[in-house]
Image 1 (cartoon, rainbow, N blue to C red):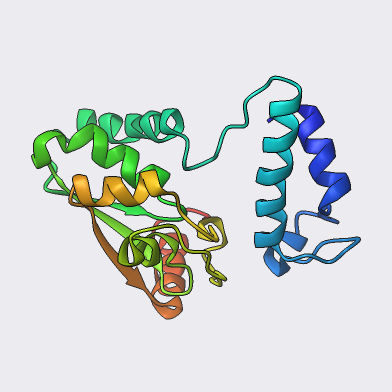
Image 2 (image 1 turned 60 degrees about the vertical axis):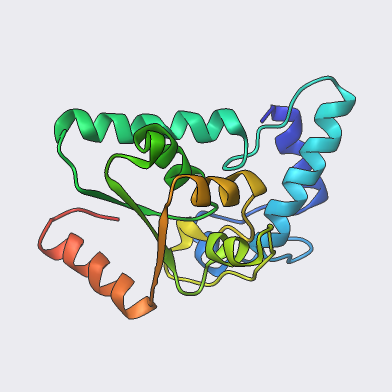
Length: 187
């Protein structure tokens, strides 16, 4: 995204008051919600980038972005070549689809299990409908709050036999607590 694209999003859609505001998903100015802000940025940047001859890059629906996500799968298989399964967090679906596309050629390779928050099932909802569907995501897993997925991700779920499961907020909080207390890692 160009600096010009960022200024357009700030002016036309809203601006975060601080990093702490991300959790409350409220914005200064017009008070739009996070999903509205994200959709507005994609639409604004798309219009502006076409006008000035630059391309907008979708964060989880661009084929090159999805393909590049597959490198995470390759890196893991270099460390543990005999993986039976890989569990991948899911927002819009780009990461799980990229990993599956890189590791499950001809549907051979480890099982790929995409995990969505029960309050943010953009990918599973789209797969069930057979097309992208806009949802109102809500979850403590705020990095996975994509309000929609893309047709590319929906198609890749089927073609690479990605399993999708959802987990509730109590399970997410328990996992985060375990990572922090036993693993001594901040998430």
